[in-house]
Picture 1: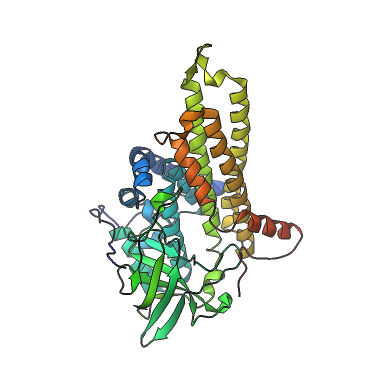
Picture 2: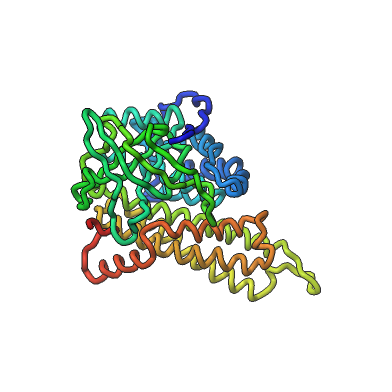
Length: 414
């Protein structure tokens, strides 16, 4: 990639790569020690720089480094490879917590962590050793690039970017949109079609391309409404050559391991965290803001009380749905995981949009000021809920399940 650069590397932590297995909380509940760690690093280091990252529309490099120092960058790396190996309840609680301070940091961590889950599910022993060590020991990030300009993933999972055998390696050609962590990650898991095939059940292949590989270009354009710190410009691949061990698993296997469904569950956690941050700001503001001539806090107004009361109930429902889906995750098959993720993301989407919009109305004109977090939460939520599957697709598949009609989260094929 023209001018591509890796994230600055922090000094290695003492004992990096030998993290002990975290204690497991009972009954599918999050590990409280890990969640407290995420709360601390978010409050002290990630949240204070969130406005700057948003304003400059850049990768949250410093926050990635902080996550690495605390071991959280390896939250989805198996314990056997030096990571935390978090179960799904703890993982979504960590995402939700970080999103309360900086949604862009939470989203990039989620993208990276989902790549780790794919490597865990499909990678060879050599691939796992190499790539997990890059994360645990060197703080490298891995991006996942699937979106394309001519294909709507909310309708059909189809890749036009092609990978073809070339000697002892492969060549990748195509264009990807919304390439999260461009110019920031060390490797990109590029979703391709083997030999340009259209049956993704047989042709879909994830190929790892190192940053800076010849033939990768981008204009670096990323000026969006929200989620500005995810830095996701379009990228073109022109005869990009990769090694023979760059592909992950076998063609089509990515659809069979129940990892792709986790994208939507993580999105739901981020939406809930965003909405919780906006709600907490509004409640604190209402308690402190005194208005004339009554000279009483805004919180004394019954209208404000009713608005926040309704939002609180809706927000609690979204959180409970998220936690229930996460608790059921480990025991669910691929189809069931699609349903769990869809229902959590659907409710988180609708509640998140409602909360972040009404919070600004409750706070009033000051809620639109960039110095306050409500405005950024509104923009980030509105932008991030565009991630597939869409509301229409989610309600359709949930309805089909209720009617006994089996269908996956995504349609696969031409």
